[in-house]
Length: 416
Ligand SMILES: NC(=O)c1ccc[n+]([C@@H]2O[C@H](COP(=O)([O-])OP(=O)(O)OC[C@H]3O[C@@H](n4cnc5c(N)ncnc54)[C@H](O)[C@@H]3O)[C@@H](O)[C@H]2O)c1
View 1: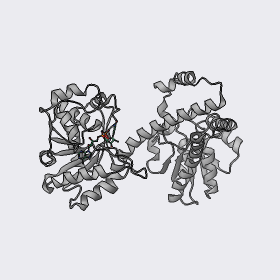
View 2: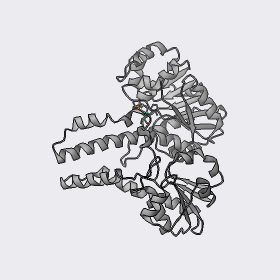
View 3: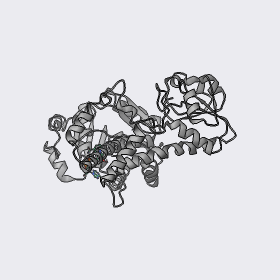
View 4: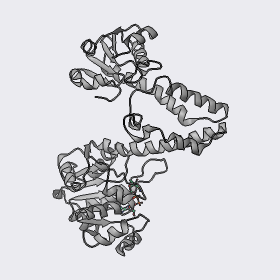
C-alpha cells in the first residue's frame, strides 16, 4: 500500500493515478473541508477527467483516511505532495514538508523500513541538507530505518490526469538500492523510462523544466517590449512566423541542441545579433535585461571552464584542445568559443597547447596566429597530452570515445 499526503492538484491526481493502476492507496490531507468534498466524490478544484476516476476508485483502491497513523502503518511507501510555497525571502518554505514528515515519523516504527518520497517540488540539495537531517534529528537513521527519495512531478494543471497517467519519463532521486527496487515496482505499470539519479539531480531536473519555461516566457515578453519600443512591429504575426522555424519540430536540427549546456554560443550570428538588438533597444530607451544577461552568461561560461581545468592541471602540462570551429560540420571560426578558451588557457600560463579540428586547423592558425601547435589527426592530438579539452562537438570525437578513456577529459560540450 501507498499513502499520499496532501490531496491538492498533485496529491489527488497521484493518489487516483496509482489507484487506477491497481495499487491500494490511502489519501490524507489536513484540510477537512477538502477531505469532505472528496469523500462526497467532488473534486475540490477543476481538473477534467478526475471526477470519473474518483467515482470509480473511492472506497475501492483509494481510501480516504483521517488517521495518518493508520495510513502510515499500513503502507510501505509514503508520498508527500504538500505545498512548498515561497517564504518571505523567496526560498522554498518547507514548513508543510516538515510537519508532514513529523506526522509520518511519529507513526513509524524503525523496523518497518518505510520509504518516504517527496513529490512536492523542492530545490536541489533539499533532501540531502534538510530532509535527511530532519529525519535523523527525530532519531531515525536514513538508509537503515527509513529510506528517502524524491520523485518530481511534471504534470500540467488542466492536463493533470493525462500527464500523470501518460508521463514522458519518471525521475527518482535516490541513493539506495532498496528504494530503487520498490519504486520500480510501484511504477511498473507505467510504460516509460524510469531514471534513477542522485538526490540532487532528481530535484534539479524539475527546476531545469520550470526555469526553462519561465525564461522562455520572459524572453518572449522582453522581445515584445523591445518591439513596442522600436515600433512598427506586428508582435503577434512576428511570433507566429517565428514558430514556423523547423527547429521547433524535431530532427534533424531541433531545439534540444540549443537548450543544452556547453561553453557558449559563437559564430557569425548569435553574438553580434544579440549585441546589436541590445544596442538598438537602448536607442529606443528600452534596457534589455534578459538579452544583456544572455551575453553576460555567454562570457562567464568560458572562464568557468578554465577555473575547472586549473584545479587539476598544472601549467607545465600539455593540453590538447579538440575542435576549433564554432560548431560541428562547419569550418566557420568567427567568434568561435575555442578561440576564447585557448586565449584564456594561454593567459592562465599553459604554454603547451596542441589543437586539432577535422577541417578548420589551417584557417584558425592563419586567422588568429596563436602560439600553439596543431595536430594532423585526432589520434596524434590525443596522444600528445594527458589532458584533453573538447571545445566543439564534432562527430569524429563522439565516434572515437574509446581513445579518451585514460585521459583527464574536459568535455565542454557534454558529448561523450
Ligand atoms: N500544481 C501543479 O501543477 C504542480 C505540478 C508539479 C509539481 N507541483 C508541486 O507539487 C506540490 C503540491 O502542489 P499542489 O498544486 O498540489 O498544491 P496544493 O496546495 O493544491 O495541495 C497541497 C495540499 O497539501 C495539504 N497539506 C499541507 N500540509 C499538510 C500536512 N502536514 N499533512 C497533510 N496534508 C497537508 C494541503 O491541505 C493541500 O491540500 C508543490 O510542491 C508544487 O510546487 C505542482
